Length: 283
Ligand SMILES: NC(=O)c1ccc[n+]([C@@H]2O[C@H](COP(=O)([O-])OP(=O)(O)OC[C@H]3O[C@@H](n4cnc5c(N)ncnc54)[C@H](OP(=O)(O)O)[C@@H]3O)[C@@H](O)[C@H]2O)c1
Image (tube, rainbow, N blue to C red; front, side, top):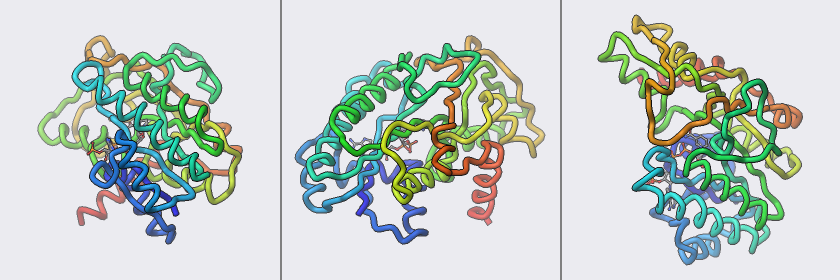
């Protein structure tokens, strides 16, 4: 039985679909069923479900808010919450799958790709708390996967793809940052990899998983809007100031995930599939 945290989020919804498709038994939880910051709530759920696998994806994901008013709650969810989940999983011998982020890196590696064991040096409070979550998982869990991903979007919830599409309805011209490099990730590819590592008994440890090929937010926006008349214009990060500092170049190396035999689509292929799903949903 898989216990899923953060089931109502972007990735949570995608995982639930995949579990149903594959007839995998799971228990979905979000804050109403199990508040991960409350150890009693976590214990009660683990006692009831007795999972042998835990997919821990619940997180505080408001990156800019976490720089000020969300700082305390972000720490509580991403650090204390992850500790509660890791301890509860370890106490019953369950395997833990924890999702982390490219924001644990500072993005100064401009002519290469981050490897799984490169040193973390987050620039934001979000990256710092997700990195602390990783450290707790490594310390507490004997059977774990830490999967770092980046620029996540999917058919459920708020994300960059929907934001661009919404803005395109009322603006003939959009300006998008063209000096941050990374890899967009479709929730479906990530969800499939999470299930793949369990089903194929992949060696425990830390993995990077995003869609293949790299690009900038400008490249991503251009591809999203390629069938529209909207002009997408490049700007620098300085021209588009945000509260939280983002890594300039957070391209993560995917060789370790590929070596497991998992086939990773490019982000352009993944985006096309996601948009096709969206079109089907709306027809
Ligand atoms: N989005 C990205 O670009 C990105 C990039 C790299 C890594 N990640 C990681 O990928 C994972 C999934 O991200 P996502 O985009 O699917 O996030 P999301 O849509 O924000 O979903 C997170 C879920 O966690 C829930 N949650 C928050 N506090 C909780 C608590 N105390 N107890 C239980 N559940 C709680 C949220 O509920 P509420 O909505 O009610 O608060 C939400 O349903 C996260 O671990 C995130 O750090 C995301």
